[in-house]
Image (cartoon, rainbow, N blue to C red):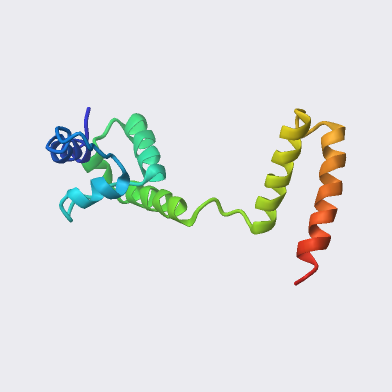
Amino acid sequence: MESSITKEIKFYTEDNMNDGNFRTTRGYIKSILPPDVHLPNKNESAMLRKIKVKTGLTEEEIRKIKKYRILLSEAQDKGEKGSGKSDIEKAKERIMKSITKELKLAKEHPLVIERFNEKWNEYSERFLNKQ
């Protein structure tokens, strides 16, 4: 079952398929849709699909129920805020990824853990202690 948004997107993009420069980026689709049509982001779409499967309601019916509107709003906000990881956590993940690629071992392996501790100490001395 297609939602009204999907139908409108198809309607507005079918005209542009014949020119050979068919684009489906979010910004492009949003630019050709009328202002009153809401285009959900990735997290909101996933939550909407889960609710549809669970309840069997259509998108319009789901958006009328306050409980589901709150869930969709929270999912939308979560997607806009990003991963929520701090810069330190991201740096640790980058270092761990480079080590596991280099050694071709799992991150739980003792050699990887040892190398990670060495690199993390080096990194923290160089960048974190400057502040």
